[in-house]
Length: 595
Image (tube, rainbow, N blue to C red; front, side, top):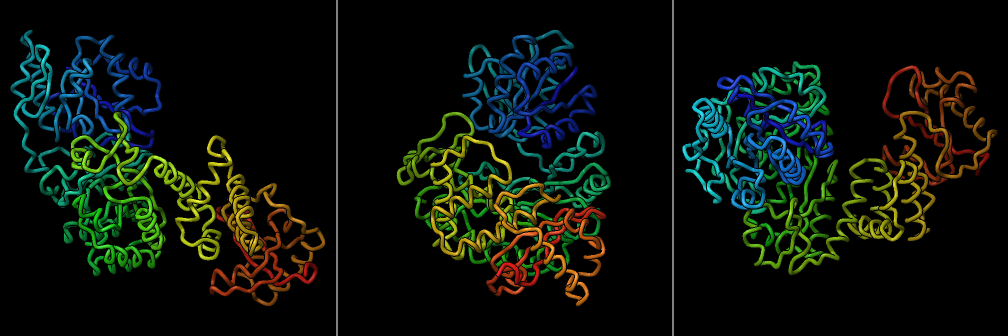
């Protein structure tokens, strides 16, 4: 029997762990199993045609909120060209409301509910037996499914979870070439000990672990694969079991081979000794932590049954940030129960004060099966009827306010999370706005007023638009803001830009004077060794540097926090003898010619 396992990933670089588990579990019994992945951006009929050409006897789709709409389009058309082929759906999006999906979409034959490995194998066996005997498939013998029979939706007995996860054959023993240059998802445990009511993991009971021996063996196999660059652990709370997590951390520190690992961490339960261990021993850039804060409103956290100590969380985030070794991605959810606009503003500022490398601002989604959806009427929620079920408002947060927060999200992504103007933002947030949230909100509102959301943008546009906004808001101290924006723009260029977005009145004789000063600084030992070696001639100097005037000593401010205003030259050198990602910057002496 030919089985096709498939899904529509959000992006090409993603990979489906669920499908790989199913393949490894059924392949000993059904060797003719094929795994094929598409994306939600692929043309529907191209997917249908590709599956059709594979001549399947059974097709199974893995379904999530990000792909359910496109998946339904595919299966609706696939059923028309392969009417006798069973179409099976599984995954979190269809697990918790199988009755709705089966009644609404006749192309679906079976839905696998919950953990799927054992259920899917038995389902394949039932179809295989019916094929061999030439009889109708007896689905009532397969636990853990919903199906349609004589016009009615029927459920079989619930499937118990696998007690021993190690009985699932490893999905990483073969087909590793499929994972080259993709994000590889990895699971060391299943389940979550917490009961956050907006999360599907709250429905499961307990946490189960794969054996440490297996985890290390699979990780080693992936690490040794040259094409595997990023491994993302999908464990809902990776650090819930301290000893288990520490052993994996140590193994990865010893064997990482340059691979990047991402974990979902509950920061307020990460013990200080673990934090110190990571700060002292983690190789820079190898680990990345995703930390869900969601809200700092105590009443909101109580209503969604989220246990959180923000003081301990803050200590952990700050200590890790001080180490400079681990990037941190913190999450917020707008629209949680009893968090109005003012409360969310406070939550944002509380978390932004920790200065995470990334701050993701999301919006509450009423996922099927969650507690917040079941009790939506208690808070007057209105939300999208179709995936992703995002809220449109509630009793204390209007749709107008949600739209305003979305503007905050937009500029937050473009500027803070993209790290295009880091130094500029730190300057203006501390001097020009009451709170960080107010900057992002005011800029987001201004962005909307200008209609920029309907336009594309280059890197230069982002700088021009920020400067235009600041000009219209306030002119005080703007020359210093412009100086830092010049620095940020030039620092983030990989190659010498051919033109600048700001008018630069510096004349050639002034730049020649800067060059002479650099030569003198080289002789005085004030420049890094070998800097002028590549710029021995004035021709090479002009070819590989950008020189612009700035209003204060940026180097002193960056290195010592001291503000020294005056007329300075910023010289940015773009190396051409060695491959580097960023420009090398120096700040020259005050220029008498421009005083």
